[in-house]
Image 1 (cartoon, helix red, strand yellow):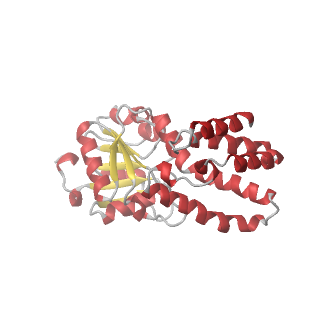
Image 2 (cartoon, rainbow, N blue to C red; image 1 turned 60 degrees about the vertical axis):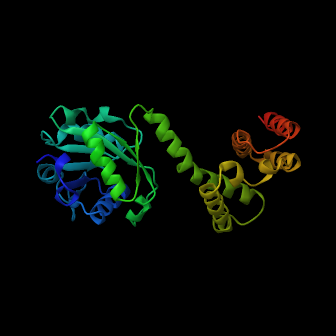
Length: 280
């Protein structure tokens, strides 16, 4: 019986990669009723299964490894005809799995748009997460079902520019941390103790994220650009002259906010645009 015909409890799944995504995925799959036979590390040792053993005994293998390792594993491991091999990369398409298809296996991708923490695998984070799906039709159907059973939302990526798709994810996730780094620097420049920045500013970030979850972005936004407060924006730009890199980041991000329909008069919008242009 092919992997496309099997029920979740019959589908033998292995995960290669014992990092954040690999461990979270393995636990989420098991909780969703799939038969997870093990997790393999790229380098053998410890309580982890052998990659070769998983390949020989599983219908479906997930490659939760760095992008740079995908092409090598696709060539090196003993894939077999009819097997499913799925990477979890956001930036890579299916071309990196050419070695898989050359042996008659089916190549696919399942990329969770989620930031998994270091240490605790946090498989519950799959709930409500969008998973980018790519692969031949029959395999894509299996991956859609897997995403749905783990509580995630499948999104087909066929035809999407993977680099831009992944860059979008970097903006939403990695750059949120970058903004906290910048906020901490401005906090310290103000004369306040840097050690207090994180606990003081994180609730503000969390509140903004919750607003964005519940409201259109135009209504979720608060602060001087949302209010059309040109005097405050001007004071910020002057004060940030002490750190030109921070000033440029403030200016560039404020320009992005002007793409929102904030209900400002044409005069206010033009005044904000002039201020930000002068800040270049």
